[in-house]
Length: 264
Image 1: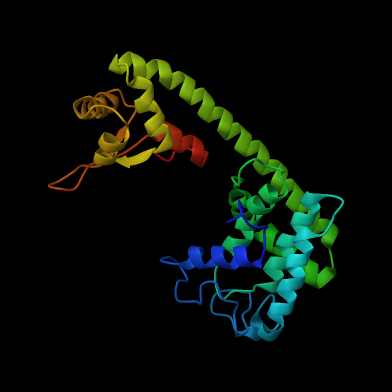
Image 2: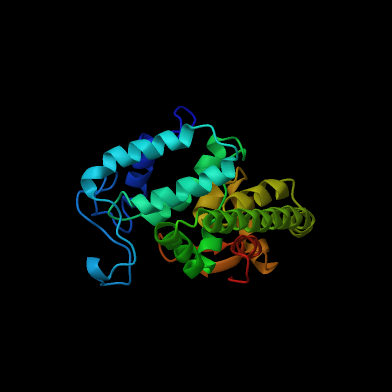
């Protein structure tokens, strides 16, 4: 949508509808502002025990319109502007569910909207999840202490740290690709080696049938590649095919770089 529209409430609500469709919270009015109170606190707490209570539901449409205007106002620094927008969105808590996920999604969308990145691919959730208490304490300090400086400092540190992590992962993937070009060519001794490599880099979790049909390689050659790459410990079998069900394989080296740890 952002190729044709500015970042707006329409985009946010459409994204929320997609986010909740078929997943956690699908029964909680996807794409619609909440019409009842909600609050933030320990699981099972009452509104009187909540750490934070957002504005009343009947005030949401007007408040969200003000928030939308803040997206497009001129600001001295777009990253500080984003820190404020993220905090304001979480404080408004406009939906029954998915506010945290959507608020984190807002980060790459705004960075792309303001041309700070060339594609909407900036994953900041890992930093927030690893510092969950500091994240919520920073947001709470806004309403309790009006500590915008502390919050903006935390947010900018998150962007900086996540940028370094993302760049390190990107370089790790490039280095892995360079190593694998030689290794896969050596193992397969085929003119289709790089084509197969590009396929598993684009789809590091895949079924054998999808690889055979989608790699653009003759079927017998493609099936032989899967066997050779498994024997060479480049691919790992996750589940063995049975009957009409295809085998599922993964490319562990790439997935481990993406996860930032040895998972597979």
